[in-house]
Length: 595
Image (tube, rainbow, N blue to C red; front, side):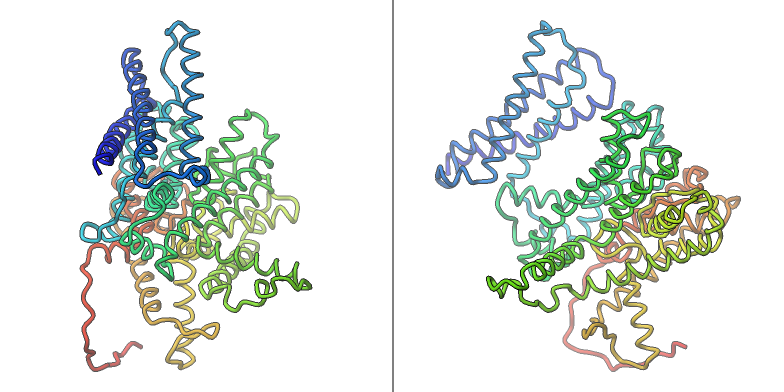
């Protein structure tokens, strides 16, 4: 035990100092500093990297359990430490070589690789600590809400740094932009393309990724990766947030979420790049950044774009492969992580059965498996397909002689109509002039925005399953049935009650927002205010060009609506209200007159 104490102290010391180093690196990147201060920060970075090396060496010199060489070579953490250490050594060698060649006169401003090494040191050391969500301190709902608030506040401060913008940004505008990014909404009060530098756009992309997945996902996975597991209480908290069927599935679910997210985003970035590789006026690095930014923004259903006019920009307005790629990406992101994993597992099983149906080997593996596609997946996929079809038909009817006129070919009209019908499902990208939409299309878009994406996804809205349960319950009552049944299963009463709670709470928040904004700015057109509030609550990001006209007070109201829509009003109630114990009695049942 005596040997373990210095290791723990060194770990804690490295965490504190590297955390300070991350803050210093952000300040160094966002502000123009004097040469002497840059030199001081530069030596501080090198000290942190050396401290991180010491912590790694100490960890392997005095391990908690005896090290076995052949097991060590197969240990993923040891392999990670080896490769990152080697990369940092090479980085430092190149770094000092450049310094020696310049006679130690080279400017130290902008050593991005050194700053990344400092951040990697912080992540490595904090992940080796005992992360635990104690329910006596914060319940999962409270942690979820506070984590979003923290990221929004930090993001707003980062966006106000001089090097993040091309001109000064007020705190209200920074807070609005950060809220829109973390809540993966896409509403903007300043032009993302011209108001923010590449550094500022990287900050926005980082907030989108964190907001789409959640801090708990990253923290838990890093803790699991470096320590080989997470605490029992943390697994309970994760299980509540991800609705895992079994406690042991919690971490597995999080791993699947990360793999699916980064896999789909990487694939989408490749397809986006292939669709714009010959785009004039863009360098290779700009095309790569455009591809990655839009892949992350699309999968997270954020709707942010590095073009001022979004996908309605003249250079990509008729780029149908790009529109199809982005539409497919945000539909995947809006399906929900668990649904996507379940669907991929089902498709893999069906493919294996088709390929090996005549094979006599491993027959049990390729045998028919009932309910491999869960009832959640079935309801979500059917409702998603139905809403996409309704939207497509509606846009084709209402806009055939409207916004679709500029598309000369039939497939151009079809793809543009499909994109216009799909993007209200909380994606927020626009491939047309929103002010030119016909009134029936606006009403259809409001409805599609309100329903939104699916549960456990990066999208918002009341969710497709909520609307499906409410619709099934209505049909059940009309038929005189006492239960809600679908696919030979009975829907639990708690699911029905939760669905109607989510629906009326959403309308309460949206109605309150419309009332307050209309009172503050009575000159605004009501339909535009209604559209804006539905878009904000459902974290869509579409706007009838109203957002820049909002006052500071109205911007704060919309920011609150975005936040409530992202975390969920029901989640806020659960986090704030104390749970009552279930009592072992029931009162007599009374039927209340409703209609």
